[in-house]
Image (tube, rainbow, N blue to C red; front, side, top):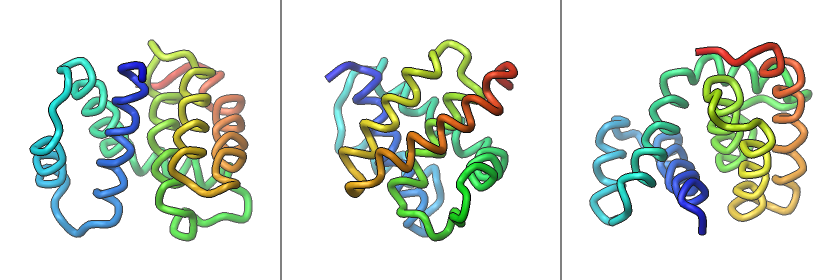
Length: 140
């Protein structure tokens, strides 16, 4: 598995825990890394994704809600919601990552960890965000 792919899997697992547990984010981060040994390059990229997603969550959630027709964020599957958040962060704030890579990686995560329709659902929303928002120039 490629390093950034592994980092995205870790970041998704952390974001999932943040979404469903009532513990503080920093405690969840510390607890997660206690049981995992990995290269600094992987853990650093995962941390960048998690922290960036958390810091920009309000804007990201507004963006997802805008393009997720007939879907409330609170009603989305936890995996789908967090894959979308993380990928939207990449699309909107990470100029060094090509949009196609962010979308493809997110679709792969959704297929691997979500249900049978997750890949299509994630792809559709991220494609809209990319075309309408990220295309005009990345923020941050």
